Amino acid sequence: SQQWIEYYRSIGQGEYADEIARQMKAIYRKWFIFIVIELQK
Image 1 (spheres, rainbow, N blue to C red):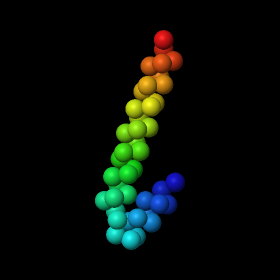
Image 2 (cartoon, rainbow, N blue to C red):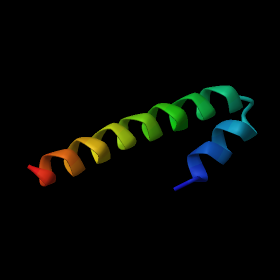
Image 3 (cartoon, rainbow, N blue to C red):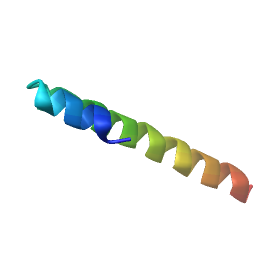
């Protein structure tokens, strides 16, 4: 699902796409850690 990043880059919104990708990764990591911790209880 990197197509939208390529699309934003092609219309000159590369920094915007990178920022969204960064935020999504941060949220994903947060949830992943949360779930792992919950499962250890």
